[in-house]
Image 1 (spheres, rainbow, N blue to C red):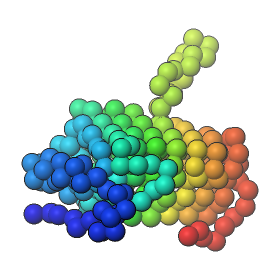
Image 2: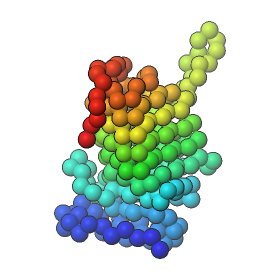
Image 3: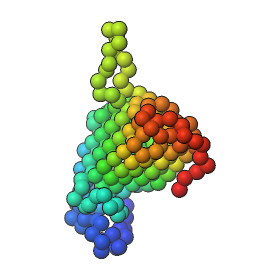
Image 4: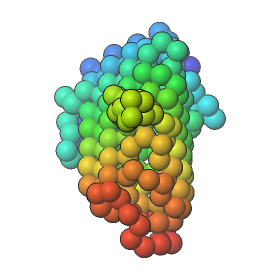
Length: 217
């Protein structure tokens, strides 16, 4: 049986809710037999649509993050016919929101999605391994409404691909059809509407290349 031992320091500092942790273990580890560890208030609708690959393990609300508390609820909604693929160990901080209305969301190993970030999927979002998605980021592969030009509706959904070891700064917005290359950095407050080359820092509204970078840590 899968079970994670949560760091005692987090219990002492009240960064983990004992009630949420035990409810999560009963609901997800024991009832559904899923490698999901819970440290704060969490709703998963529907856990049976989670898929785990390569030793997948979903950790939710386990860790200290100054902008949130154990009372901030994380919500994951996976609609019928859609799925959320956990490809390795994936960390979601408290207060994040993930809605997969259709298609597939894939998040890679050792990627961190920080508090209050929103990921909305209508066709497909892939996030690589070792990424840091900062707080209050929004990743949307849909405009939700079609714009008509010359009487014809324009495409309003397109997949998003975020490579490995990408850092997306706080309050950034990543829009439909974008590919962000490996090792890229998106500066805080940017709106990404076009592809970002690998190992490139982009910034602004809309985001534009600023410089080539070697790496970030």
